[in-house]
Length: 378
Image (cartoon, rainbow, N blue to C red; front, top):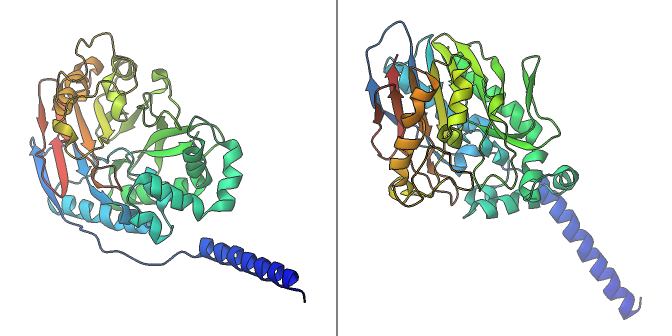
């Protein structure tokens, strides 16, 4: 063998070995169960227990490791619900509300350690792409929006995410005999068909689904009407006319996903359906963001009834004056709850005081570390 042929043979062998090693690496998924802090405390318990039920917000404290599997997340959320049950806060008319995006990060379920240990969301997504090359290539041609990579990553895992979301949150609703507003999840044009949540082929939407005490979905996935600027590159907006009210044992319930609670047209849409209760799953990124200057409508048009400009209030003041706490009367609902995500998901940070409101007042939960339960007896 000549020296040139030997070098070519060696190079080819190394290349094949590298390809084989990479292929093997993409298939390997470590099986491990990470311990997490399962503690929670009752932060608010307002009103008197009665026959009308209650709105119970679970403000979880979540980290990337909690999304290693749907089972890992279930264990944590079950611990919070166990605490609520031991405190006497669960009954057949309880509506439990979880925060925005609690289901979205199921996109990371079943992935490599590098995804969970990444310093940022962008780094985690890069590892997610690197470890799923064939699935990503199949999803890219169908990707829509300006951020086609983010679209493709959610799209390639959509079927498993939808199945995990329904099994997890429908299972919790059934196990505890409650109505559960399952925060939100990003899926391509999802629908409920014959009781099963299924992804479609269209644009991605940030959606929320309500599960009844038998574990079955109530209505269709509620699509977010007002995606903020960080979401607009890969999720689509639904019209306010698509908002729906579902019947629960505690009353007619409407769900407004985070920024949807800032706009008069969403309350008008629910008022036309005789809404009685409001649930607002929310997520405010950035540690300490509640006390920082309000950023305005974050890439969305300012409603005609708002005269304030960005920076004139703190973020927290704005949530109290211009979101559900200040607008609940526009819907005619008798009570509502806003529930924020807390914890540290990669570099996103988190902020927000969960709150309850009625036609006359609102009450904030204290901003303390750890998971919090926020309860309003109806």
